[in-house]
Image 1: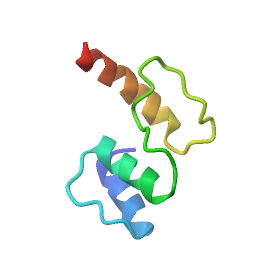
Image 2: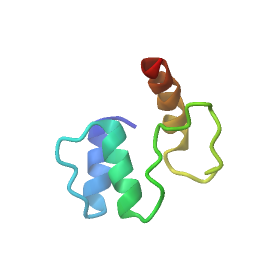
Image 3: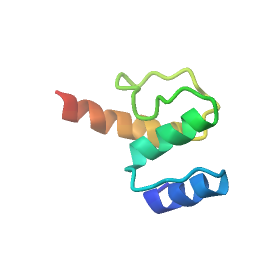
Length: 70
């Protein structure tokens, strides 16, 4: 899902997306929904949140983020 799509997703849930990047916007949505704000943090590729709406994008971005950290 791209940022524009996530912004619409957020607005449909009453969340004002502002100018957040994809990672921070998804984490805001996660917090607002009462979930862990863990999007793109599974650097080792392990995540036990198998029913997470964001899981596929999350794991892909986590790998990219882990390369930036090193």
